[in-house]
Image (cartoon, rainbow, N blue to C red; front, side, top):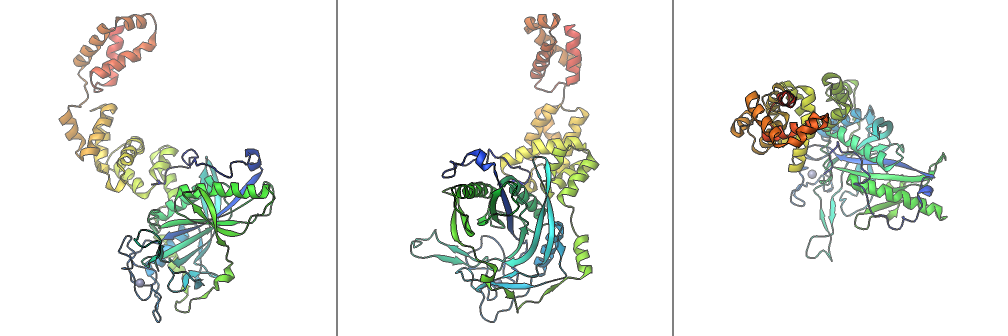
Amino acid sequence: MIRSHECYNPYLMARTVEETAHIAPDVIARYEAVIGLEVHAQLSTLTKAFCGCSTKFGADPNSNTCPVCLGLPGALPVLNKKALALACRASLALGCTLQRRSIFARKNYFYPDLPKGYQISMYELPLATAGELEIIVEGTSKRIGITRLHMEDDAGKSLHEGFPDSDAWSYIDFNRCGVPLIEIVSEPDLRTPAEAYAYLNTLKQILEYTEASDCNMEEGSLRCDANVSVRLRGADKFGTKAEVKNLNSFRYLTHALEYEIERQIGLIQSGGKVAQETRLWNVAAGRTEPMRSKEFAHDYRYFPDPDLLPIVLSDREIEDVRTAMPELPAVKVARFLREYGVSAYDAGVLTATRALGDYFEACVKAGAPAKSAANWISVELLRRLNDAGQEIASCPVNPAALAELLAKVEKGDITAASGKKVFAKMFETGKSAAEIIAAEGLAQITDSGAIEKAARDVISKNPDNVAKYRAGNEGVFKFFVGQVMRETRGQANPQAVNEILKRLLA
Ligand SMILES: [Zn+2]
């Protein structure tokens, strides 16, 4: 699973390049890609966009359907108020202007999984326009324009595999029909796969923060189409673009873009022309393949849906959306830097999700020093969660329990090394730090008698190193400290160890 604080890593994204491998890097470098993304996100509602059917994922096929979402004659759609509220919130969070009046339009086309014969979408008057998103790639910030955000409903799903007679029949599941979506269309401002990755990642984070969508990519809640063209660097006209459809993971997006850019450069270099068409990413073959030649908007015969009223938003309603807006990721990062003095890296990690930011703040509120809480959460806690395949919501160590542990480390009741052991046990057992320290006898040794005894043992066992130290090799001092810490199972007070060793070795 992709976590939103992960960053683009070309090594992880490595793939085998087949027929495009013959293009020399210096040829590729002469070109520039122009990329725009159309992202579809499922709004987090319990029921569908225009009827009361459940949107629950994984229900039995065709169990969440009714005359409205099946497009039966005479059925009338009614807009889901929650879906509209979430779409409005996402619009403002993405810096868009909410339109006072927007209109649902029918996008007409035939497909077996579309029983109405049209998709309810928005065309000339979308819900929101003219937004932007700030992305950061390799430390450099860039603004990516958002052309529009509109509402629409999803289609059903054709199942071509998984049945005993799948060689002869296709099956259709209409459960997704009428599920509320927003489509977010970017300006063609992206130039590299890394920028596209960062854009999708930032967008996903904002949709999660605003709870407009859970952005669960495995369940199809977030998918993306990419418009790609290439041109010689310095040219001001765009090349002909191809659209790569239905990229439902960050990995596919990156691979498909890399492939498509090279394919188009190869075509142009060999004197060919890029066709304006829709392509699909073939995961197994690692290449994009033509799907159909591109429809134009007029092919869809868009017209206003006569069954649905225009959406009319008053100043007051727009203001209410703005007031109810939760703190957004960029604002939270700035606040964490200012309020807690954490590093920029930690601020980025801690704000990756709202839940993680909340966890950190609860920990500080419970008395943990901010910097050490930031450090422990971004290193120890996230590593253990990752290893256990768990989310912060199900973390067995609650913020107050972590704060208690950090207070003990801070006060010197246990050493930092023991603290990590205690934390591991807390994570495994859900017990408190105090219980584990008592049961395991991990309390820090401050008794100088015990430390001195360990130090004398170490010194008597290592006459060679003693001689080296006394001859002026101060580097060996670390060796003695390490040995004493080992003898005391990492529990000796490090300052006391230093002092006692210095005295005995003098
Ligand atoms: Zn329905």
